[in-house]
Amino acid sequence: MTTEGAIVIAIIILVVIIAVGLAFLLVRLANSDRKINPVLTVILILVVIGAGYALINGGRDSFLKADLTPDSQEKTDYWPRDTMILQEINDLEPLQEKSWKKLSPDEKVAALQKVADIESRHLGIDEATEIKVKRQKLPYTRIGQFNPTDQSVAVNSIYLDQGTPYLLINTTCHEVYHGYEMYLVDAMADRKISRRQHTYDKAQQYLNELSNYKDDSADFAGYYGQACEADARTYAEDAVMSYRSQINAHYGRNAINNKQKKYLIKDPGTNEMFYVMPDLDNVDGTNR
Image 1 (cartoon, helix red, strand yellow):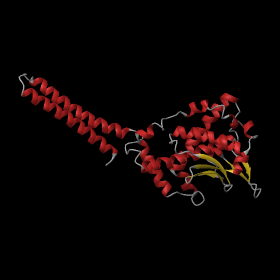
Image 2: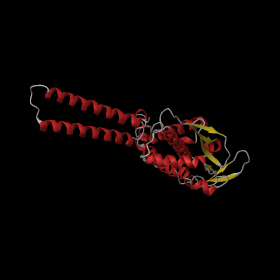
Image 3: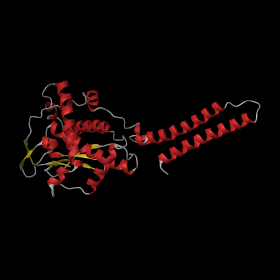
Image 4: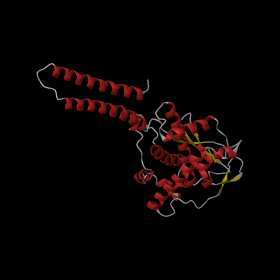
């Protein structure tokens, strides 16, 4: 039996108990010397019927319209990104260009972890599903990727060393959104999302695409056009502009610069130079 069915049955039982109690009261009154007012009796019966109807329909609708189950709702309240950036603005200081260049790889990962934490909370990802940022050796054509096995965002060591804060914030937000997509798919499988929710259709679409994922190496056009990739790009582009705007407002106009729309990265293994285009999800090297 579903939770919805159990709720409806419990309400019906409650209404029946009230109706039986009312009937018992009327019988007692009928057997006593007290005179029963027929108008009052009819009103009481109608009130019980109306209350039962409202309880059954109201209980069902409130369940169907809930975003998540009551237990998880408490952990997934909406948190505006801009509000959280302002609250964490001191911890985001390393994301300034002048500070970023002086950071060690571990310090850069720690700064990007703060971004991942903000985005996870903004998206409503359950606290138990913690997304960790780590550096990883990846093909130089890949800036970063989401690893579902350990719920982590892997950032390419090459880009961590040579990339700008703008590029790496974009990448982190892009990959966290992929984590959110998988979170939605799991929530749908666990029946934490009702069919009447707007997120249900998205979760179904992501499930279909992730089950038949088009890799960029084999079909770049197909890869680029998938909703799971298009949504992640749109989300990341909006997110990185929020970080840039808030950090620049606090630390100075050019604390984070996005003027370098296209710049060179060097593969330390082969010394090969190639272009990175963060505003286009890096056409030469990609996120996934």
